[in-house]
Amino acid sequence: MTEHKSTGVNFWKPFFNDLKPFDTLDIEDVLKRNKDTIASFDECKKQEENGNYFLRITEDQLTDPRVKKLHGTFNHKNTNIKELEIIKFKAYGERVFTQDYDRNYIKPSNSLFTYDQPNFQLRDGKVSPGFGSWDWKDYFHRVDIGETSKKNIYLEIPHKIIEDNLALLEGTDAYIIKNFISEIEDTDEAWSNIDYVNEVIKKYDTIWKDWNYQFPILSYTSVKRDGLLFPILGGYSSTCLPGNGLHRFCMTAFAKSDVPIILPKHNKNRYHIRSKFKNYRKIDNEYTYLLLDVDTKKERIVFYLSSEDTIKECLGTI
Image (cartoon, rainbow, N blue to C red; front, side):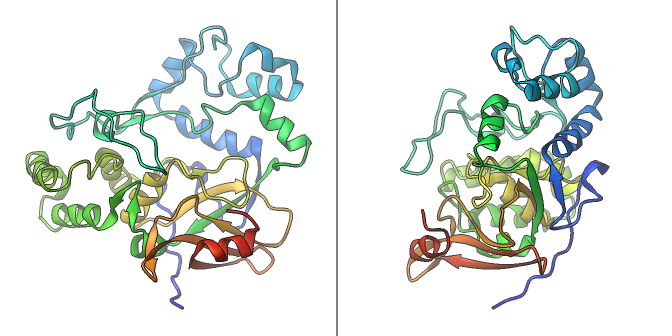
């Protein structure tokens, strides 16, 4: 077993800096930290005044008083719930790595991933709320029936765990992305020489089609330079890492920052958390899941690369 020590998370803004692994937060606390972060940009304030929302709350959801409270607390008084438009703005600068990618081209999907958007370089650099698509009435219903918890737990995955073991980024061999990063960062000018970076991107494009389809290069450079804006937010499950944001794990770890996650708190002190898909390095010629053995009483996490059989044994489901 290899022990990887935490090196800490490099956050861009100060609103999550006080958190330590195994801290618990109510959902309102998570929302406030996210809101304070995005509201620290002047453009956010402008969009709120124009009616854009932080939380997507429709008129029919307001029948739940808890949803109504969230709406009054976190959405601006000008929010137009009849014509919903999310807060979204450029925070990392202009897109400079778009190449000549076709906006109408959608990467063919496989059994795990279905793509409905073009290459990430064509949509990179914008910030929006992490809770922008949640159905809050449904969320509170799930809380009421015990399917999820209002209490959340903050955890960190040492970057070396991801860096050394991630094998696939939604179908692309992770070593290609790591080689690309090294080729840029081994130069004196690194990311400041945009022309050189674009030349290297073109070279990789000729060898590996769609290699950066889900790797946002501009966002990576921002995480490397400024830090991460938000922790990675889970959904309703306390035992599964989010499956639709693997690029966030990738770019955070490759930028040498530990990976912060916030998930619903489990009702046991000892439990397991699994990755959604088998994206990690092969054992016995099979890609593996990342499995976290979490002990909140001892404040300890042991990380494993696991087969489907092990996942079923630990969680009883796949």
